[in-house]
Image: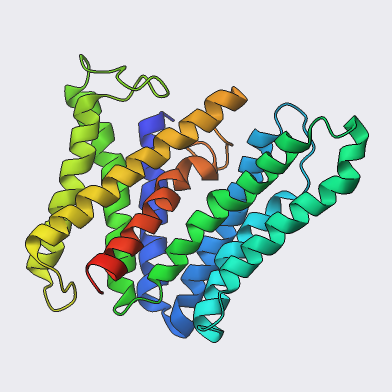
Length: 280
């Protein structure tokens, strides 16, 4: 089966599952959705751990620690809203990383301390800390609408960048060296269509999305821009590890990290625009 057919098949399965979970299982502040995000983050953290360990470097922690941050985000917002549980979890994991190096570093006379600490902390932060912002969307008023809008913006950015690139990008590729197959036309399509979706959200559902048409346009475009950046950032990780995909779990897309790179990078700015700038 070709890559395009596999991508379409994956989308046909994944999108209805996501909609069902978000719309029909909203109980306990979208617990089912949050557990799904936590599980996916765990798998992404495992793949990131593998990328970071390509040079046979033994990291301080198991690969599962990154999933603790989205889980901590749910527990914080659901049960302890006054406690900065995510922050304390992050600081504990980072502090423990450096403490363990006191013992683990003896194996190479501490020559690899900087690299081990840096890689382990990166594995804690990415994708885990970024994914915790996806959990935050579940605690916004009208959460189901905002969750679905977020994924519409991110998925449409990736989808229309792909099709615009195929249709119009043959002669304008290679601008960004980390991903030379990406084209200007693809980037333009991947920004414009989500921006229009953001505008339409305010136009079609003003009783839900309480922002102006222009604000919706900017929300869609900026979220899409960060989604595109997330794809490029993960490409740099894979180039450093000298692999084509982060894994092989998802047909047509590679690994889990290949599928969530745009999501986790776009989520913080999406939440920030909604809560800080638009006051949702």
